[in-house]
Image 1 (cartoon, rainbow, N blue to C red):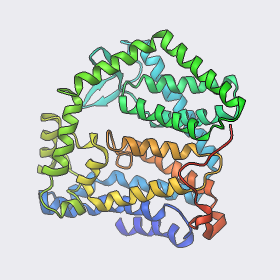
Image 2: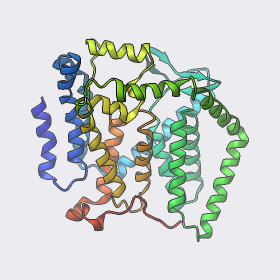
Image 3: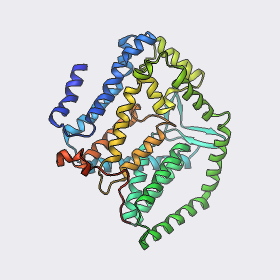
Image 4: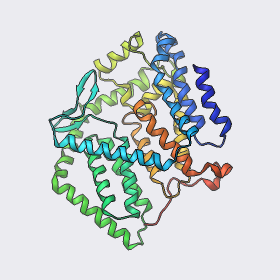
Amino acid sequence: MMLVIHSFATRSLVYDKRTLFNKEILALMLIPLFSAIPANIFHQQSYVHSILAAKHYLLFLFYFYLKTKRIDFESIEKLIVGLGVVVAIIYIVQTVTFPITFFQVIKDTNDVAFEVRANVVRILFFEPTYMVFALLYYGNKLVKERNIKNIVFLGICVTGVMLTATRQIIFFSIGSLMMLYLLTLNFRSVRTYSFLILFVVIAAVFVGVGGGKYLDSLINLTQRQDVTGADYVRLRAFNFYLYDYMPSIVNYIIGNGVNYGDSAYGKEMLDLEQGQGLYRSDIGLVGALNLFGIIYILPIFFIFLKVFRAKLHNRTYYKFFFFYILTTAFTGGNLFSLPWTFTLIFMLLYNVEKIVGLKNDSRVFGKKALSPVINHQGA
């Protein structure tokens, strides 16, 4: 199986050498499989169990599948945006119908639709990352086309993001949108100020319909959790997996490997997570470092670097989306390790390659084709 996977993936490298992300994606797919070695050495987990535990990383092949099919990137973009809007609408509907449940996810083998903490209702439904991309997409469109359609869809996405009740998602997604506006608007244009007035009006409406009380609840939740709540537990998990759960210096290089549920390693992790609240999946790249070592982190940062330097013409919102992913990579899940976000990441990386225009061959990696993180656009 390993040889088949390697042959399929490297075929793209052989026939399309001027690609941006092939080597990084190949590394991110194979490293978790080879992490069976440290899992066996340090935790006595069998190689069979380790391979089974890491099998979902084979979904990385989806990236190479997209490249072989040469799908139109605009069609992929519309699909992602459409899913993002649908997710936002579901968040809105679920909030309006609370406590009646229409959509559920499985959490710790129990059906859970809501989580209530300090009078803040958190909807547990779907990965909101699609919604964040749709937010930046319509935010960018509104700069160019100030029409009712873009305002409505942007409003739906903003509302959906706010209703996640997850502070890092709200702060970093809205922050990325603000950066997009501040760094792309032409402040010498009268149209820019008309846009800012429109934005202020929308914000005032949000506060007027109860958004202010909602934000106050989130702030109060933050103040409570800073000392004894989830933030304190996450900090404990951060320190534990970064310092204490590293048997030797070698683990910082190759990690501990993926745990399998029925193995002794898996049962140990179950006790740490459900018994002590030390979830490795909640600490982003630090958790990935503990799993796979620095050899897994380096390809991820090379991907970010290439995206930020790529010339994306009038689609710089891709850069701000990856900025959002980078900023949340230390406060939440690492999207390069979560199976339900693999497809989104790969579709966007595929689109970045298409936007850059790999047909312009060697200049893709040359200085002329690379630009700073921010490409200024007129309003």
